[in-house]
Length: 313
Image (cartoon, rainbow, N blue to C red; front, side, top):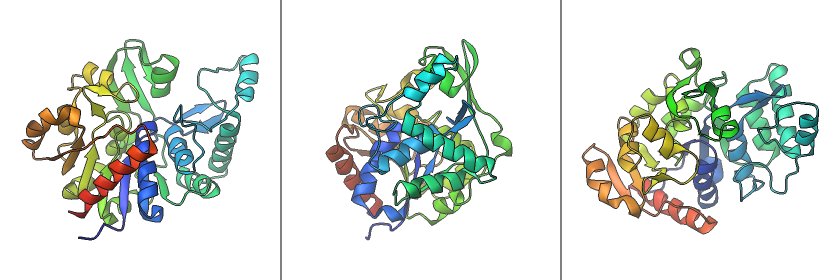
């Protein structure tokens, strides 16, 4: 069978961008559409910050800092240092070149443009060939109910270093939100749909919570392949494992399978978790064992080549 011409991916930030970079190199990037979490978005210094949108865009543009996985390579932070001198908060790192992105986005929003239009403007200016769509044009901040009270996700993750105990997660205003233009169409029109190895609760979860998205994914269940973000019971990036455990989920491949069981047809797990394959299969999910740890571009491209072969079946 031929490779599906169009592929749509649901993505968070750093973890997802590794797989997306492999896709960008291994297929015609013009046939790739990425639906990105915006629950992490926050307003700081009067600017609309969209961390996951920017991480994905900078990565595919070849500009991201490869060590951190976010921000520009060789970035400086003089403006942030000056803001701190004036007593402004500096717990969230914003680089000098990165700041231009946020100013541009905020100006567009203040001019009456949408987040989708801002994302399109930024990716086009940086030469990214794939479509990058926010999950919604309406703000849907992820709020963490924690041992320290209610916290915006960025406060929980960055300011408090993911130390508070998580008691609950909610996506503020999601009930009245709508998918951004093109989101549902990208799910309907895709030959295959990939769920990137992002945090299932606060990266993929907000996308799924947007009205209409999960329902549309259920209708495409057999065409959906998810890559498990947990390997050997641990998250490779971020606090996924800790959050899963604190909220009563299993911090392993089976736990991910249960969270996604209603809408994925295939789950790709690492060889470290192959003993869980039979139980995952019993949930009605096809299980494929492939190396999912992506530290090098070669590893990213190798995993993607295997996923694209799966997509032909």
